[in-house]
Structures are given as C-alpha cells and as structure tokens.
Image (cartoon, rainbow, N blue to C red):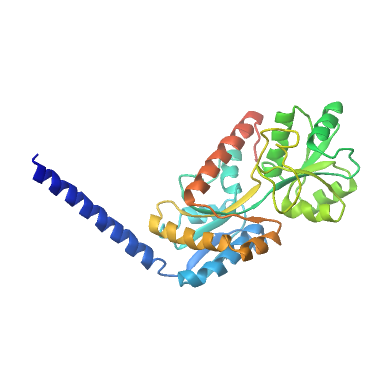
Length: 325
C-alpha cells in the first residue's frame, strides 16, 4: 500500500468516527422523546421515595414527565424492566435485592448483570451495629470479647433470610470467630420491640431503622459497617477501624437501571441529570431525612460495586448454604 493509499484509509476512518460521534450526539440531544417511567416497588418504601424525588428533579431538565410505576415488591419490578423496550424511557429503581435475590433463589426470571444497564448508584442506608443499652460493651473489641466469653449465648436480630443485616451478621461471626445466634423477624415492628426490650441483644440494622432509637436512648450505637464513617452518625467509628479490620458492607444500596442494550447516549443523559441532582445540598438534605446518604456515580462505578458485592455475598451464601425458599 502506497503512502497516499494509507493516508486515504486514515482519513476515511477519521471521517467514519466523526460521523458516529455526530450520530451519538444527535441521539443524546433527541432523548427523551416521550414520558419516562420509573418502575419500583410499593408506595411508601425507600425505592418509591427515591423514584419520586429523582423523578421530580429530572423531569424539567429532560423536558418530559416522569411517571412512577409501583409494582408489588420482590422480583416483579426487575422482571418488568428486563422485558421493557431498551430505549431509555423505562427505568428500574430498586435496592441490592436485585442482585442478592438471585444468589438466594433459583427461580428469579432475570439475570441482574446480563439483563440490565446500570445508570447510577443513587443512595445508601449504611448498616449500623447497635446493642441494647444493658450490654456491657462500648466498642467492637469489647463486643467480640464478650461474645467469645459466652459462646452461643448472645443473639442478633435480622429481617428475613438474605437481607443485608443477616449477611452482615454472618460475616461478623466468620471474621471475628464468634457464634452469635441469629433471630429472624418477619415484622420490623416486632424486631424493634424485642431490641428495645432486650429480648435480642444487638442488630446490624439500617441507618433509617436504628438511628431514631439511638437518638432516643433506647439503643446504644457501637460502630458503622460501611468502609468510611457516615455523616448520618457523626463521630461513630467504622467496624473495621475499631476492632475488626477488613469488615465492611455498603449497606442497603439503591440505584437506577435501564434494560440491557439501552443506547449509551440515553444512559449518559439520564446519568448526567440524576447525578447532577444527587450532588446538590437539597438531595443530601432530603435523603438524610430518610436516614440515607445521597450518592451519585458513573454507570461504570455502579457496575463495579455490584460485581464486588455479588462476589462478597455470593461466597458467604454458598459457603453457609443460605437459601430463601
């Protein structure tokens, strides 16, 4: 091939790339072309709150109404979005149950990675380790020592099988070498009542559920399970820094997804407006009233966090044969 021929090839490639860039830019500018639907779980839950808050914030900049479509909880919201047209006009707002449930059950009608495109991690409810005030401990080291001195005599409460609180408790036992017994509750009200009464001694609870009880003096806070301290509990150390190095969980993660194969320009536009809102003081304040931290990430960062979470909890679920039948 002559030098002139090579030059022509280079110029042709450059022209093609420029054309593709122009097409992508035009697609991004055209999106959205109709109302956006956010599919989420039942009215009044954390994902519903997130959907409505973000929907209101992005509707104006996107120039389209945003409609919240509440479906029964469980796998139905995810199944609905996995089957939706991949055009960016249908989104899913849910928590890490999206990828934890398939680790616990064999009948989930979607693959949490293959069938969805990540848009953004929106907010987090950190896991907080709290104990009944009568328990004679004030930090993680003392708690581990007490649990080892009284094997299988201490207990911790959780919700149903496979919740983050349950998995955090199992991880704590593994890493600390303790045998703290799990007590499962179907009702959050019953769990809280037994924690306050001292029927159960401790829990790895979401910030939204336990911090009000800590402020009222009914529960004693020990540490936060997140990798870093949280502004929701100022001055409280992490578990990893106060007695159990390497222990961490991101807590209850809520995020936005689109169906797999949604065009990249649509994902980028949605991410831009969602993250723009999540980085505002208003978003921080509004989520803080719900016991949550506003987050905001790139689609790639969110996908990487999910991959890490699946690897961490998948191993524990498999090793302990935890099943949600």
